[in-house]
Image 1 (tube, rainbow, N blue to C red):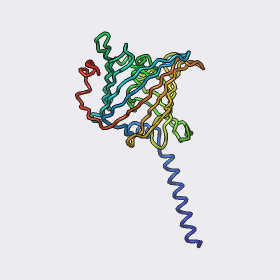
Image 2: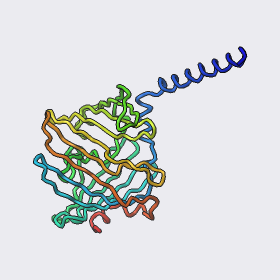
Image 3: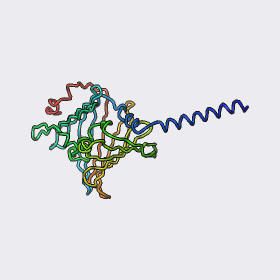
Image 4: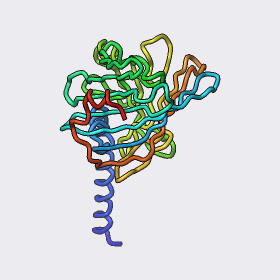
Length: 267
């Protein structure tokens, strides 16, 4: 190898290393949060969901649901119906998850009372149907409501992740979500949040979210099994596991289907 070729290769190697270093250093916590927010999650989707509720003694209860979702510009419209058990069948949940700074709208229909209840902002930190997920967990976060800090990089399940700290900017967001601080574990290859730890504003409770199964369906990454666990110290208080199946995108769903009329009509 002559000196000229050697210098050229060395220059290329140095430039390559500088480029990689620049890319690693260039990404910020805010940019990661943005990429998570704009990630393709599919459109006009329909899927079955099983909710398994596990108390601290290990006793389990199961509920099954049918879910629909549609994009309206930047907004996400979501409709969910409980199928079983019989005592909750046709309980419905409608969400308008707005892309701008408006508060999301949510309605819960209880067939036993034949009544639709609008979920007030002050109630969104409450448990969704007895699960470890809150009403606010059922919508996407408004990324402008948080301050982000990149804490470190590590591996989870053989995948490199960014660990990001997120803190609500206002007490209003803390009150609505029930979380005063969170750590999000974001996969570097696809910007999916595969793990999270939330410090709740309620005493010393913590919530641990883990994506147990992540699949690529029609080119879209979908968390098909998600666990949310509520802990107090070392004691596990309750666990909820959501399992998704029969996931289909690009279904024929009209915008008018996502209405209180459909919610009250049931399956």
